Structure formats: C-alpha cells, structure tokens
Image (cartoon, rainbow, N blue to C red; front, side):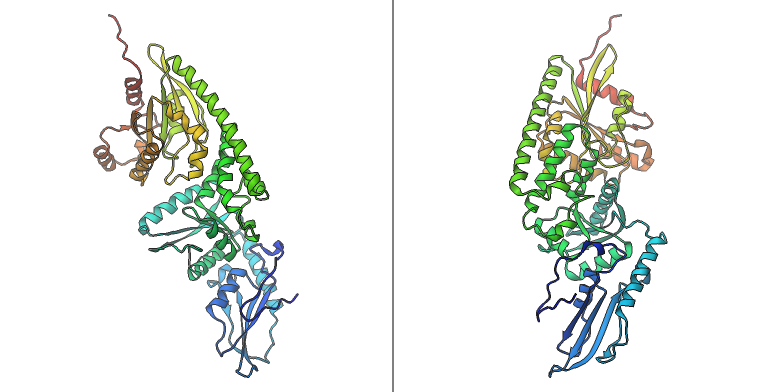
Length: 483
C-alpha cells in the first residue's frame, strides 16, 4: 500500500489495531523530500517516534528538482540507551539497504527484550506526569499520592515526569519537545499509559491521545476506576456509574479513533466500556434514572436515621483522609471485620456498627468513604447519598495518619471538604492514628501543633480507652452511680 501526501502534509487513514503491541512497529515507512541540503529534522524524528514508523526517510533535491542525497532513521529497542538511530547521508543512487529486514530485526529484538522478563508485562504500566506552577517538592508529593492511586487501581508505575511552568498549555498540556521526552521514557519503561496529575479538559484529553499511541488518563479517571472496583452495595454502584457518566458526557463530543485509547480497562471500568457507544441524549436519560434511584435510597436512609433518632441513639461518624485507618479503628472499637487494607479508598460504602459503653448504653459508629485532596466534583455530587450520613452525625471523629509526611496538608484538605459539605459546626474529635509509627521527636512536635488531639494506634489498641471516654463525654450524659 502506498499513501501519497501533499506538499504540506499527509493523511494516514485508520490503521489496523493488530500492530499496536509494544513489540511491533507500524508497518509504515515515511519517505519525503526536503527542498534544501539538510537531512532529517527534529520534527521528522519526533513523528517517527510518536507513530512508531518502520523508518523515516528524507530525500534532498536541488533547486532544479533533481535528487541529491537521502538519509534514513529507525527506532531502537529500550535497551539501546537511545530512542532512535540516524544513519549518515547517502548519495541518492546508493540504495543498498534492506529496510524490511531492518524492521523485522528490530521487532525480533523488541520481542526478545519482552520475553527475557526484563519487561515481561507491558499492560497496565504507566508514566506519571505533573505539569504545574507549584514548587517541585509539592509536585513530587502529589505524584507520590498519584502513584498510590495507580497501585490501588492495579497499575505498575515505571517512571515519572515533572514540569514546572508558569502557564500550562491549554491545548496539550506539554509542548512537543516535552512530549517527545515523555514518549522516549515510555518506550524505555514499556509503558502503555500516561497518567496526568489533575483533571484534563476534554480537548486536552483528545489532543494528547492524537499525539501519542498510549492510553491517556487523568487523576479523576483513576479515582473513578478505583471506586468502580470497590463498589459493593447497590448504592455504591449507582453512585459510581453516575459519576462516570457525568465525567464522560462532555467527552463524548468529537469522538474519534483516539477514544480507543481513552477508555476501556483502567480508567474505564464498569459503565465506561459500554457508554462510549451511546449518544449524549441517552447518557442524560440514564443519569436521570440513576438520580431517581439514588433519591429513593436517600429517602430510605433518611427513614432509618429518623427511627434511630427517635430511639435516642447518638451517631458518631469516622471521617478523614483515605487510608488514614478509619476502618481499622472501627474494627478495633466494635470488634468487627470490616474490610481494612493498606490501599487508598479500600472502603467505599458507609458501614455502621454499634459501640457499647458501660451501663448498657450504646451509640452508632459509622465508617464513611475517605476524602482526598481536590476531590473530583463528579464524586462530590454523586456521593451525596453516602455523605448524607454525616449530616445527621452528632459527632465527627476526624482520623488522621500521624506518620504521613503530608499530615498537615491532609488535615487541612479534610477540614476544607467538611466546610464545603456544611459540616463545619458539627462537634469533632481529632484522632492522630498510627501514633506508634511516629518517632519521639515528631510526637513532641505534633503534640504542640495539635494539643487537643488524641493519640491512638488502631492496630495495637493503644490510646483507645482515652478515645472511648472522649466519645462518651461528647455524646452520652454522665451516669451517677449510688453508693
């Protein structure tokens, strides 16, 4: 097959997806002319890199249109230390080179590197990307959290890129040079995904997917995928589907072949795999049905809360940053077996247990979904049915990970979200969990920073007596025993 372009470019039609494997080239050679004596340009090499061409060839011609010299370049395997090789200029009539054999040899080497086990799994491997005006140290911490999200979603992180810039490019986030650097890093790490910290605009998502052959995800898609994996109850599944539809609705416009790399698998689990094929009208209809079903669930939960209130049983809700140890604390206090894992958003659905005190008194203790910085707006709206449990809480127990390097940032993020939810006036207790993992010097500093906080270890059970007395004092009237 020969594709002929015009003087200003060439249109490549829809290509077979059979050559999208990391061990295959595109099966295409691009041959073009330069109306000057210079050989392959940086732009030529970047096109070869992004499109994974078998070869890039340039023929220089004189002012009279006569051929002069030609030059070729081809990609190299990840072990070569360079992304491509540029051959020396040749006289136009010197064509003693077998480009087909060269491409086959390169594909064999790519397959060998994969089979050797150095990069045995090429699926669900990603490069993390941060483009922001924030200091590099802040971007590093944000990517650390993004790496934890990726791990929870089942993605292997094989590299990261940070660019600090005053203004983010509205079209594709990164310039062409940085995109080329990112592509080289992805090739070396055998990554099939690029995960951006923050939320990409629909146009940015499409433009990035047009530039690179890799799947492009943003932080919101990653969180939505984790929620889809962890949703167990009907309410949780409905809320996840509503959030995914709301996220995808503006991204259904202008759908093209790049959308194949935007959804499916990681970032598109659950309804994402089927909702790509429906139009905006049907999406809105489905969202309307989901909202009605969630409203029914809200009324049912409201009825349960009303009964509990009439019986005079107080409600305390565990809130806090994700993976702070809320579920572990609930298990220890109530002797339950709620799922508790060292992962972000391990618990999605609200869980309630009864907590008994002396004199046959009891309260209801609720474990809620964890918070995270810059919680996506789609999740804030969709999870109102879950977060409404907090509206009727008589006490909020703010659980924080005392051993986390971003403790102060996490506490501030949770307080900010509680304010957005209109819960700033609800009484609360700050609990610094995992106190056993903090060294004595840091314990003294945290004691000065949070003098009213309680220090506990949900795993070891230390400090829980003090916490129980604080809950009892806040929620239950004192009992006077006669002599």
